Image (cartoon, rainbow, N blue to C red):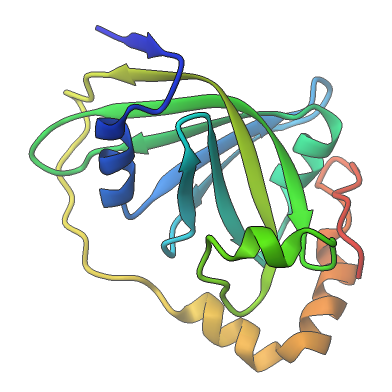
Length: 180
């Protein structure tokens, strides 16, 4: 029931743009596998072979560490509405940090939120669809604003200190590439 594609077809781009949540999965060969939910209108289809998402400051920075070490990433979108579908994007990614020279150019495609930490750019290796027949229905009620309020309360200096204290290394001790 699954099917592979080499690019993000227009119908998949439309599907992705309708989703309010997506999941990322990354790993290092010797460490833990990380699977994280993402939201906040942070994902963009940049072309039929490239996607990206804005990452705001959080409790960890596993995706950055894994991409720095290995580059591999899987993204998953699920339909929780009438038409079932699971869409996975397999690719290789890299981080663009707020202090990188290319930040201002890349950030134009995103709504930059308080606490923005990096943008992940993923080159698509393949796209896979599957039925999603077992995924339950859920109703979208809105975005949470807790993380933005937290970042606003910390301010830029507080965010940088938080990065220094909590985001420079993964839980397995890998360098995330972030500088405080």
